[in-house]
Image: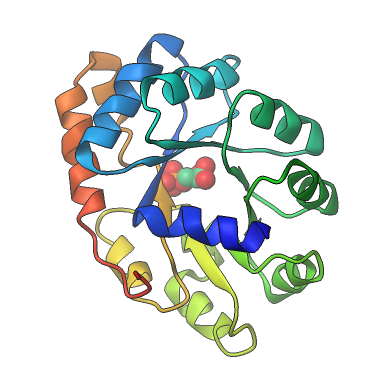
Length: 214
Ligand code: 3PG
């Protein structure tokens, strides 16, 4: 069940922006600017004190967007994120506790994997859709191509070092459903309140084509 839901989330947009938002006042305009550019699956990292409030405010401002929580490191954080309205969960790694908590909460999970062993642990937990993290330093596109052999049913969201320039290489792979990245959320633009710039970055990302679209 969580596999189908995770796949649904991954297929909505080619890019999931990874958003670290220290100032809650930026939540609504940032989400609106991203959605206006065409990206409507947004990952809010739990790396700032008010991240859960950012999730709430983005969800309220953009009811058509799918707001999720990232940097979810344990079951307790997952529960708090779901209570705040997160509709999917992203974790940099894979633990049984987080996978079980996601299952119990009925929320799709993109757990981070970087090796064949990680993927096998995920398969044992019923997962077939993963974040591939950190993508660029874990072998990049060639590693994902190599995983296609033994893990034919598995698909990835590469994240970590992904940019507008290298995203097309990932998105051209059949076992990549989307990519994640922070480049769409330019820190300077957010701090300056330059929402037009954020919308332009979102548009550029939303226009990326993917082989696994459909
Ligand atoms: C993440 O938090 O998932 C990644 O660190 C985002 O990576 P990036 O900043 O290299 O896009």
